[in-house]
Length: 441
Image (tube, rainbow, N blue to C red; front, side, top):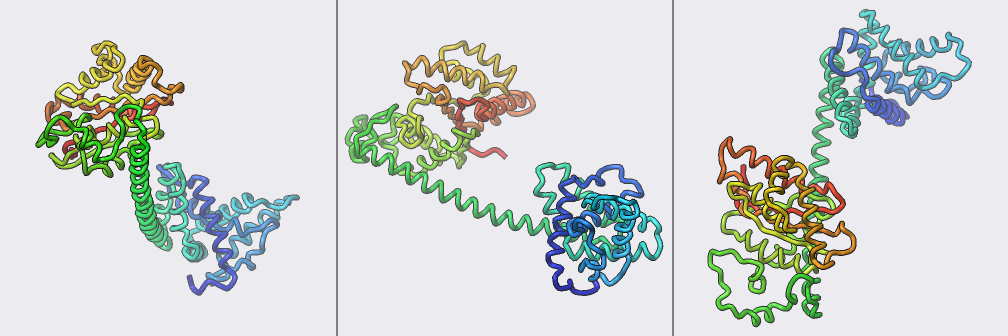
């Protein structure tokens, strides 16, 4: 701009920025593929008119009274706005021109002036550039586009900014300002994301604390879990161990070893808390770590007993659970586990999984309900309480035992089946827990 923004123009700037946002919300209707020679002028005239729309009040504000126009130091833009007013009045309209009428009139007048390609057109482009720069049209447009859920709108707005910056040297600032706005937006989102993760981590810690407290209170009160023995204190559990040395060496701890599985209580509670969040919104829980870190023991002797007791995750005491390893034929292993729930035919279940792995939730859901009903009414009256906890141990076997192109189909079908089963397509859900020995690249 040729001078500072005049006093009192701040409110005008804000309203003009609202006009740019409206232009974005309309979908940047002049942007897109197949831009012809007239398109840049149409884009510029429409953006200019949209910016001025909000400050042209009912009845029309005389152009000379708009402070932003007086700040650019020239009369081409002032004249264009005044001519648009005059043209509307010459049409003999009985009613007061609407904002839409005014914007269309200004866009038409600006485009007509730019099409002349003379000195006045050059002055008009310069003055429009000064106004658009003063209101940060590039940055405002980019921010407004990023707020839209429609990806096409974002693509069109970015295309429009690029066209204007490329075709008019006076408008090069638009793409620079948009890039600056994108950087600032990313930085803000990164900070907000870090804050959100801090809140999530704090909540997870507190959730684990509460779960441990519930276990301790239940143990002190002598409450017996639904699916397992009393959650007694540590000393009491040691006293009841009568099977000899509890040290397992390199062998993993299992559910029957829960009484002597010490030192991972908090980690197991955190895992239970993570699993609880999947009950309502679905999704896999992936446990990764170095070989020998104790992942299998954590899941078998830590998590599963917690679920069986039903204290930390409501309703989990009634959930069936199963542990499988993929082997060279993961779909067959999965079908075997599912069929075992209600005694159905493994071959039939496998055929269903092979043909429609994306519908694995149907086969598993049916098996879980059947198993629950065969359980003597242990399931709550609402079928939506049914869940299956599926632990896929040694998940890396999906990649290592059947490498190469011949194993691609089996791997793909197995992964699709797991994701479908955990995606909560039905009211009653499958909770799937996947354990990895090593996280594949």
